[in-house]
Amino acid sequence: MLLELAHAKNILFFGGKGGVGKTTVSAATALVMANAGRSVLLVSTDPAHNLGHLFGCSIGSKPMKLTAGLDVMELDPAETVKLHMEEITSSLHRLMPVNMRSEVDKHMTLSKDAPGMQEAAILERIAEVVEEGVKEYDLVVFDTAPSGHTARLMVLPEMMSAWTEGLIKRREKADKFAEIVRGMGSDSSMEDKIFGADAKDADKSRELGIRQILNRRRLRFTTLRDRLSDPEQTSFIIVLAAERLPVLETIELYEQLQKANVSIGGLVVNKRSPAGMGEFLEERRLQEELHLATLTKALPDLTRQDLYLTTQDIVGIQALEKLAATF
Image (cartoon, rainbow, N blue to C red):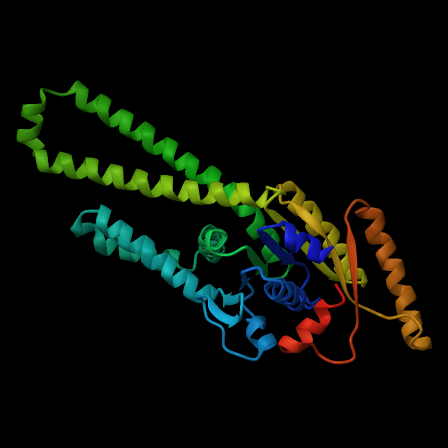
């Protein structure tokens, strides 16, 4: 299942409960695709930076070559928010009068820690990575943060698109109202004498700049939303363990992704207990089967792939290639 999806899609998201092995499975998939000749970008949105731990090296927020055909990067939430705020502040400085800059700076300082700011900043960065990645790579693989964070992130493109669309419509209404007010006044030469032609031009320039920024954001969010919901381009793979809480969380995550119109490619049950390994593991395996029966009953139409527990921790390229050979 995994390799079929990786060959067929341009974008893969791996998500699920924390600690189930999302990073390992996504990295092994990206590596085997790179070894097969596809150019691959592997991106982590998890603040824990597990990719660096997995590969035993420092990975930054810009793509770096790991092996032939495989580039990797980790999105740092703090850095992403900082750059996001700097970009917005710079845009507002260009658009607003000079005497308003101190107010802009004060507002942006207060907004930095506002609820949802980190998610919005990460979402914009993901949209940029997807937009650039699909042009430069055959496959973009995302190792996402635990379920709750990822579920919120996946519904944000639709919400942000609608919110930005609302802002644009309000700006258009405000512009029409301003035109009506200007039309009710005296002739334009008198208005220019009172307010100054330069002031009118500056106002129009600011309005145009604001509208351009909003339209650019709308296009970015709608493009990401369309790609996430396109089963020809994108699949979301849910990784879980055969335990009660991960199974229940997987069912909830599936329902949330369905509501967000995200295309779900299948399930990967990681760290399964192998059969014939003694009484203790056999009891464990039978318990796993009970939990997986609950999963199958709730999500009968999803393809499932089981990966079995290994004797050693999976660290480094060779270990990942060994795991990928079982896909």
